[in-house]
Image (cartoon, rainbow, N blue to C red):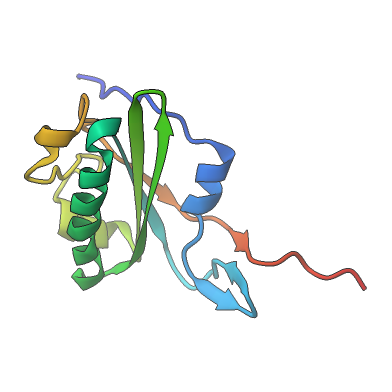
Length: 145
């Protein structure tokens, strides 16, 4: 059995917090409820800095279609420049793994590459991560009495 290599990037606490931001707004706070399964699908790619602006536009235009797919609950695109490379992370939120299967096929860890990715990406990764959302809390800190 062949092992699939894990992505070479790491989940930082900040990225993990952003990943968990799915969903129910309550007086300026965001919290995941226990009303059902929620999945965060996390993709990472990197470009040379010289191509970052063009790729950001291309990627942004491409991921807008997520909102038209059954079971999609939204998405985020983030970027960070590190040295000569710009890293992109896309987190798409889904109602269930079945919803992701309908979009991504049988192996939901497999990347669905965009047609022009080879023009932009450095060493395109072949896998994505699909995380179960457990809990999250965003928004203003509670006021002290």
